[in-house]
Length: 549
Image 1 (cartoon, rainbow, N blue to C red):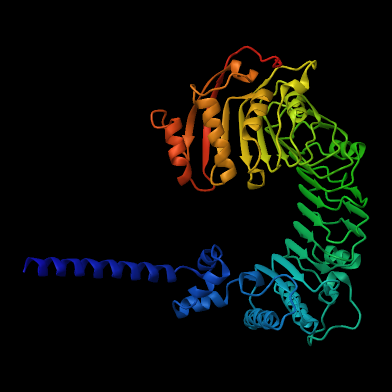
Image 2: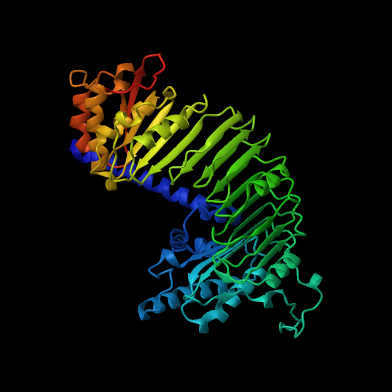
């Protein structure tokens, strides 16, 4: 009897909870349409589509949803060129879905907020359909438009100029373009053109007809030799990544431009002129053949510059960075870089990344932040390399964080090779991050640890877990820095080494729980992405180079 009463109580509670849930759903449905649209904007299109099945109200909300985002890669279609029959059928199905959705949107004469299309055109007979979609996106006053349309190799989908030709009152295209002022798309703020054939004339059409663009991105496009962007008073962001090595000149004149990114090719020269953009705050240059003088000249024209990233610019040798407001500075894979002078009193982040084992002379004339230094070790690492690292780190007293990614197959370290060489003192590092990849599984981890701890004195040492190569290195570390009984004092860095403790294992802290045995027992259970951290203590005496006799 008692169980029956309790059962009825539970049933009553469950019904009450269900009524509350239904009430919540009903109350959500009663919200204004623009709020429901905002809710849908946080969902992937595939998930948002399912919402329309909840009720007629949600179906109407979905039909008028102003964000149209179609990505072929999210389905089973291959986004890369694939002319197989199965993929053609999948692409046609995808295109039918896009066309149906746009036609329904057009029939209701709704205003569009965003239209994005990512697809591969495998049949040029369907190109007119893509033309139609682009035209509809512009006609429906979309604020954001993005088209990335890939095709087969050596063929390109051409952006249609017809959208900038005025229509007559009966909807027919006029044979000749009328006055440009008659065709304006004032709503458009962001435009992304990807993997299209875009001529210089089309760029000028866009500039004339879309005067309020704030973001203009050109990615992997074909057909441009001279790119000139001007007369866009609200332009804030420009990104250019040519796929073909065709662009010879780029000139941007935009008084309010704050972000400029250019990714080119090391093999060809491109003349870049953005000096008129005096309010620029962020500058990203990748694989650009730019000289020391040209880089310095450009930077000197940007008094408000806060972020500068230079990557793969192989002509740079002696660079001087003087920017009073600069906060973030990055140099990556500039393989001929010899000297870098930094005069930036507000700098909060400096990162240097090397793939070529390049050790430039870095002079922090005025740079208050720690240096984050990353080296990828893929060639043979020997005693001379460790000497260069030691000299590089000791070049300045700047606080430093060092990350080493080891992918080489051979590491050797023998102090006898340095006999007679005057050595700088070993530098004290804030943190060393050591990542040993599987390609380096066969290296001598003992030589690697000896060489690194001879080159510098890290306060903290961290290693990721999950790979056999990393586990091998961690076991050597346990023996070398944790196990006092087995510690070998034959290498001179150990004479100045006081001891080490495990700071954390996979985020778990607590010195009583963390010892060498616990680490070795736990190691097989740790998965990729976790981390082990050691805290190292050193004598205050600066380590001079000592040679084993």
